[in-house]
Amino acid sequence: MTDTLTVISIQLIRIITPIIIILGITGNSINIVVLTRSVLLKHACSYYFLALALNNLFVSVVIITTDFLSIGYQIDVSTASLAACKLLRYASNTSALLSTSFIILASIDRYCASSSNANRRKLSNVKFARWGIIFVICLFGLLYINSLILFDLKKDNKLQCTISSDTIYKEIYIIIQVSIFAIIAPCLMTLFGILTIYNTKQLRVLPIETTRYRRTESQLAAMLLIQVGTYVLLNLPICVSYVTGILPYTFVDTTEFNFASILFHMLNYLSYTTNFFLYVFSARLYREELSRLMKKIVRVFINNQIQPIVLNDVN
Image (cartoon, one colour):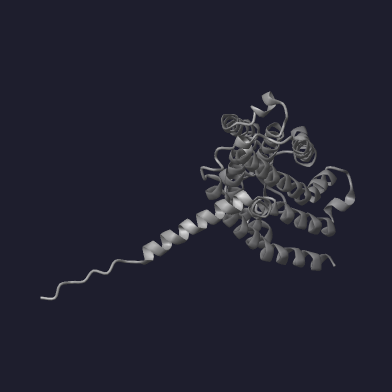
């Protein structure tokens, strides 16, 4: 049974993870192009979605790919050198937290934008969004700078990239990770998502001159809400496994638990790659902008294929 589960888990990783990587690269690349169109860049929430797409593209190309090689083919890039160990752990920790933070910021933005309080609505603006993105990048970039110091190559049964020693910091580090990803982030997303839904239901009929702008705001809120719901569902299993991992239970080291953990990690990978499909499903505005973009690309392609015919004079 043990050998069977191990073989199945490796085969699942080798088959499913490349598909997730391709979807992540393709979907996030399309999101970046669509979200940079002028219609969407007038709204603060689009900047959070754009930052999220850029970060998720990095995760798809670098983090998920290195995990795929490590688990699926036992090619651990992080053990290639000390620099690779430190940089990959730093990038992995920072990018994971940034994705979560951008969704939380977008949730707060939608709550402010849908509020009946005029002063609160003013907080939903492009300038605030830009500074908010820069702030969280700097904050978490500095927060995890200790990864460059504490992670090291350690020889046990095999060479591993891990925290250099079993200190009290290692325990605190794990608790902080679990608290942020398994408790704080889902609670904040859910809270502001519920508040946004409540605000939306309380909105009265708006003046006609603001209808188009508010319609876009409403569709951005719909894009966010379905994204928050999907994010929580896809990450809930791995959050539970994180919490279980810090408890003194003997089944944590069993093959069954490791098999479930691998499945949970693949669900977690999906949270970085599904946004494109969620946006297409939830917002007509996104579909319209995507359609315009595709038509423009087709026109350019057709025009480039049509070459003028030059007739040479026959003497």
